[in-house]
Image (cartoon, rainbow, N blue to C red; front, side, top):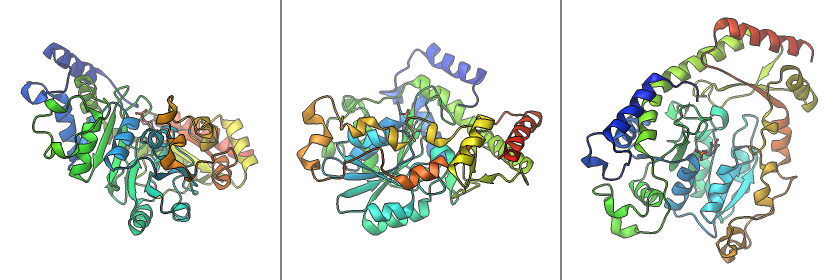
Length: 392
Ligand SMILES: *Cc1c(COP(=O)(O)O)cnc(C)c1O
């Protein structure tokens, strides 16, 4: 989250004064923030189907389930992503197969192609830290092999690839509005899909007890009534998110402006920037550097205390102990790793997997950009980075 203030406070106060904080049967209430936010998001993303729910991971699970993915299926996820991407696959009963990232730190199309077997049903490209994955290449491969594409755009709300919003390239896209994301209500998630059927199935998954109260929300309800979960968003979340959405273009514009200022200030320093699949569509959350070898990256990190993607804990596959230990559920019979349908699928994760990704990630270091930095503050950053670069 970058910006929040009086407007959000007023929006929340309005919901509380109105006394109704619940979205169900909202058509009959004078204030219906969730409905309004969903309409505004459809316009913003230029999509037909979108709904608000409680988390990005909930959106990933609902999308996987709604696409019919489950036991017997493998889903490709990149070596560099928040663990929730892989856990969502397991929550759907399927098996995540980890594939390499490339020098853009996003899913490597070549690695995807090499990992495809008849068991693979879907791929989940992740736009880490606002950096777009190569959606043209990934969608082309998916189409060729009949795979679903579910975009994890949790860290890239507002970003785009080839002029088209991230999350809207694939069959479904997931967004997160938790505290660490571009816009936030503390918690929250969004799901978009180009298929009305997938939308309706996902909608049921996100509120399966509430189905009798859906009114006209679904067209074909009887066809796929089933037990799902409860990921319903509150009116308060939506009230905050409506204000946050109005802030998003300004946040992204200022991130881009500041990234340019920093890059201009670093010209001639010898520092090399990580390649982007779409420099203008990138959210510009970070200034990302790449070094020729690991030692230099480590030294730069030590000198600047910036940060390295390899060190972020749960965002790299080598930290996903829960997968190594096949702890897919508390109850053994609900554990996808033990299910008969999944025997024979690739689940031999270990700490030496994806060595190419490890080598790549180790050589990058990044600096978070603040959209509210003044030129004077950025001059300080530039000075520090230039001084470190001179010592390499
Ligand atoms: C934050 C995040 C998620 C999960 O979002 P929640 O809203 O916390 O459930 C999933 N994938 C990635 C890449 C994320 O960064």
